[in-house]
Each structure stands twice: as structure tokens, then as C-alpha cells.
Length: 357
Image (cartoon, rainbow, N blue to C red; front, side):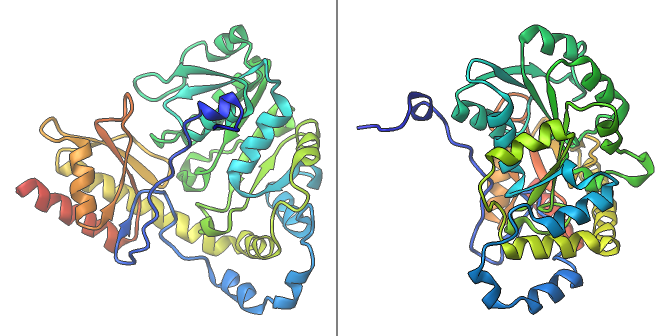
């Protein structure tokens, strides 16, 4: 007998990337940072006392929240710290979307968005990216016509890695009558020469909510900690519905140490940006094509003679994990995370060997 609600019974669960226990596997499938956390994080981790764990953590992550606000030049009240970016997404849907309303996305996109919408029981509206992975024409007009209450846009985009400039997003936010959530999970890997910055949107549009995470740029995926930035009109309701103590004491302390060590963090971002360029160059020299990415991964299209799923399986047999998506527009592509220099070289050498067979 099934006990769950009908929408849960019909739901297909989100499928995360493989997390093997085999330590010899090269993991290029879940967009983790190839760098370990920095020395500031290690220092704080070594100083933590077990006795502190008997007490509840600060419920609003006060110290971390203040550091985030200072870094971005916003008020403390414009920040909420969450248990990973996924919690912020869930809170936004719960707070702002009635059951008889809908959220909208632009496909292909992060598949968890659909899972969260269907879990909530609201509508799920899909528009489609242009062939060059840019946002569709007249998106705001179509969003308003659809009646969508909330639009979720990853930027840099997942899974292509493309970047929509802040001016275009500002125009969309001004015209769209609902709430625009910009998922900036990969924004730390944007080439600094582009001078991309969406924080300024918060000063003139109170319907923009930005998602940032420590998982990617700060090498803390194992802690599950992220944050949202927005107007108080958006942030205050999120506090009403979050778990009482939604982020733990250790995660708060280590995330604050990572955030305040900007020199180390920016060094890891620069490394990823350079390795991304070299990895793309090597893949294209072998006949693959890559979408120009501003994230820590590449979306790689196969040459005509290759099958993406087969290459994924062949690499997996060689203990190299990349990501394959069996869905339209992606089933002839692989998403490959940028690894260490040695991991990237091993990937390229292995692909060359497979092509020679």
C-alpha cells in the first residue's frame, strides 16, 4: 500500500552524480572544486572543541551572515544562510508559490527544479533555450503570459556553462512580474575580465533572489552550506519557513573561515579558469566541440563517429567518471568537470587511447 500523497507517488526522484567509495576513481562528474579547502579552514577545523557541539548553533548563522553581507556590500537583513543551495530553492518555492500557481524554468536546466516543484505540488512550466544556449526571445513576456510566480535561472547555466550578462538579467527582472531566482552556484568561476556582477540588481529590483553556495568555489561541498541574497521582502519570509537550526555549528565556522580567506579562494578559481581553457583546447584538438563555459565544467559534444553514452561507459571502466544525461539536446554530449592538472591530463590521455582502439 502506498501512503504518500499522489504527487509524491508519481514523482521521479532527482538522480545525483555517482559518489564512488573507490579512492582511485577520478571524479569529473559532480563539478566539485579540484582544490581542497584552504589553510584558514584547516586551522579553524583543528581548533574546534567537541564540547561546543552540545549546544545548538546560532539559528541565523549570525557571524557567517555578517561576513557574507560585508563581502557583498549588503545589509545583514538581506542574507539568509541555508543547508546547501537546494534548501534555498525549496524555501523559495514553499514561500512564494501557491499550489495552484507555477514555477518556470528554461530547459535544459538543473533537474532538481522539477523535482522540487512536483514535491510542492505546484505547476511546472518549461521554456527552451535557443540553439546557442542563450535565453529565449520574449522570455519575460512569455513568463507573464504563463502566469508563472517564480522563474529559476542558473547563471552560469547548468549544464552548458554559458553566462547571461547582468544587463540582460536586469531587464528580465524589471519586466517579469514574478520573482526571479538566479542560481549562481558557479559564479565564482566566471572570468574576472568579464566583470560580471549581479549583486547590483538587488539595489533596484526587490524581486530578485540570488543563490550562492560554498560547495563549488570554496571547496566545501561536504558541508552542505549556501546562502541567499535579496530584498527583505524576499528574505524575511524565508526565515519564517526554514528549519529552526538549519545549518550546523561546524559548517558555519568553516564556511566563515573559507569566505574570509579570499586570496586562497580566488587562487583556486584562477586555476580552474586556466585549466578549463587548456582542457577545452585539448578536447577540441581531438575533434570534440565545447560550449564556451564560465563554470567549472565543460559541455562536450561528440564527433560524428562517437556515441556519448558509450564514451561515458568506456571512461567509467577506466575509473574516470564524467556525467551523461539521457535527455533531449544532451544525449550526444558529456559534461566534464575541470579537475586537477594531473586528472585532466589523465582524462585526455585516456580518451586518446580509446579513440585509437
